[in-house]
Length: 522
Image (cartoon, rainbow, N blue to C red; front, side, top):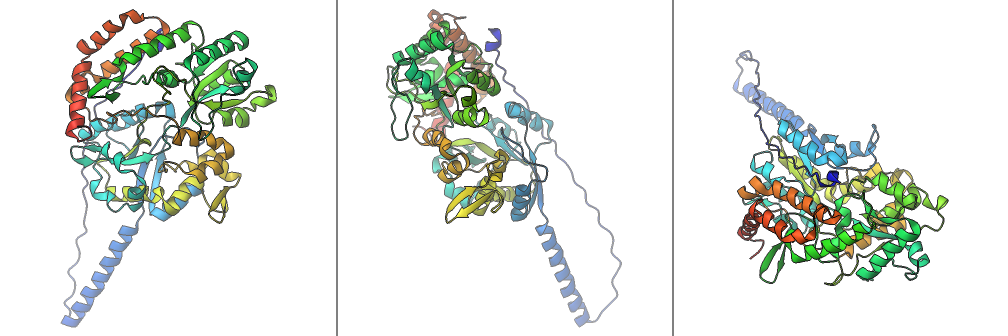
């Protein structure tokens, strides 16, 4: 059980090393004397040659490394889409794509080395602000004025969380708001006597009460040997959401005239009591924290999972990739809403902005403006179409305004450079996944989201000194309360220790004051 409670926070100091470039010039021979007209003609010719030379230099492709997160199929070596993007943007870029589960660590290591890519994606949860304060990145305020596509597509409130010290530091990476869903074996719902179906239909947001969820999980355990499962602690999100909270550190909500750190909210204790009950009854997969997606899928295929919280494409994986109905013809995975708790319908997730992170530009980049223009090309128009759908005639065909993907266009790697998405692109997702995309549309447009007023706060000195230890302590205790390793009658002691030993109260005051100073709250 100890492995559940090991949480590692890596704090690395960025060391920036300046490079000095020296140029060499060749001494020219003294030109022969000429008449005035010859001299003027000669100067004109020299000016033309110099202008042509400068033009050639300007038109040379801008070379850079581009580091971003990607968890699907990689592009082939002779990637034709990359070549098209480079041609259109007059660039030559080298993609740097670390393993997804090591992405944050790899970014930190690269930056700490002092030699890192010009353009880097920071995914949610990664602290870019501390690194920016240390000089790793450059502000982008002066460049976004000429980025019309980005300005057109990025909602105004997204820029607020990218501000620090009076500057905007990055370009938002838009995405659908909540790409995760809760799923259930709907065939078992009917078989076990819990109604005809629990499926969450588009346009109809109905939730089942906690008691029904509990009883269904008990029936699945007793009759099917199946549990509630997922990949990591985030899989428990809708269970916490039933009580109007989420199990995230540095998450603050406003109620009335008060601000609450969510990990100390009274509803957190109530949620932990209920989730501990499910765990103690064996209704939650004991390996839920350590599962990888492959393990989760295998358990689902074997009938060991009856309910899960995972990314939206669970039915696609079950039916298309794993062909579950070849071995279990009645298997029917459908999305459902989180249970309705004592405070009303539950929350599915905790993202308050529709962002998949932010692109930061290295302070060492020679031409930051070219990188902003590169991203702007991908954000809309032909660049968006190319990066999302591929090459017309090869990866897709157009019927009027409708894009129809070819078989080649359905390959996962085709959209690898489509990092500058829109909040919701109906045509893209439905052309790629057909009716399976309905799960994502529901997630993007209808799931209830609990907003974190402190999202992307600027870390202050108290948080920098104690924040990582506080986060680790809170997450360890939450897991211990769930498993029963720590009894919930110790809740008051937990809150006291968080405040007095790990400075939670001081950190909260610092964060709230910082948000007020930034004008984000009153």
